[in-house]
Image 1 (cartoon, one colour):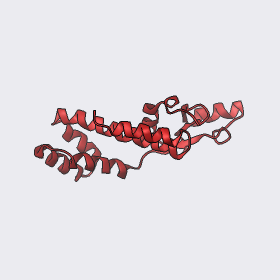
Image 2 (spheres, helix red, strand yellow):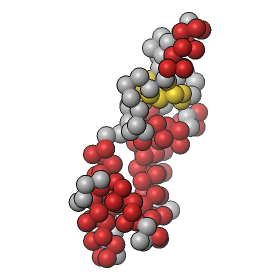
Image 3 (cartoon, helix red, strand yellow):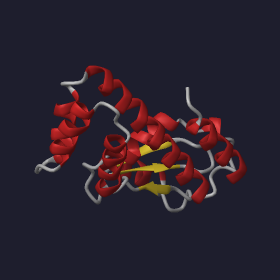
Image 4 (cartoon, helix red, strand yellow):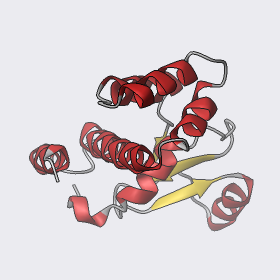
Length: 155
């Protein structure tokens, strides 16, 4: 197992958020080093030439978070919004087609809440990243729980 600080959580979050990869291109984590790499045609060719592959190295494929989970995050944020005008506008935004785009567009009307959303979303995604690491036994579960609790504390 690795210490949590051996993992670049920002890179792991980015990999967990990346919904635009095809089946042949993905991010993976090397549990021996904590490095996160992009796997694609070029990386596969290089690995083949060097005589290794992701599975032999024990690499863990990083699957992106399902869009319904991110949608639920937006709903949770909206539910906690105190400004009724902002809450109503955001709620209407997610009821349209392309709710993610409409949500971000609606946030631009409320600059102070835009910052709050990004902080809220960042904390949720870091918790997911740490939970993912603990689930795959890359980091110690006790250390992971403590880190998640620190992320839940109000700032």
